[in-house]
Length: 203
Image (cartoon, rainbow, N blue to C red; front, top):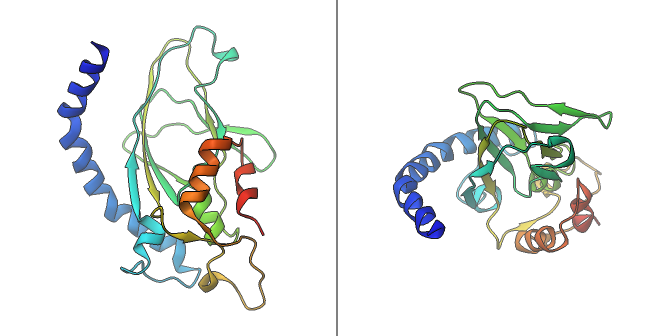
């Protein structure tokens, strides 16, 4: 019965999700081009699109209230695997990012705004110039939290590594060339915490 209800909801909201993805794609491309402009990549053309935004996926995360939020997590600390993530969230809050001093900073939701996270793939290809965001989600004692991350990833057959075009003269690459699908599988099978997943891609 629950499965039937879930499938019916998918049919109801399918068009809205597809419309949102269609709207978000040019925005994601523009954001990536702004980020890459200072790294000798002026445009994401047809040859680069599979590498930086070959796949896009939308998740819908539901976090029910938890009577004891101090002993439970909505989502463990992790980094996202792709290039960038456009996060739409409600006003409940609960997203925390790790600061430079090992502290956790609450990201207050702003009405009408998207939160943009950088993922591991962009850190790898930029040779550490951009850093993926380690984050976690806390639950609320009385309120439900819903978030909708749109993940912009390389295509699964793309090879990611320190992008030669972004390296300065004499700069050594930090990361080896690997298939994005291999990195994806590593993250899902090993379930590394925090930023330790990047060790898999390092030379």
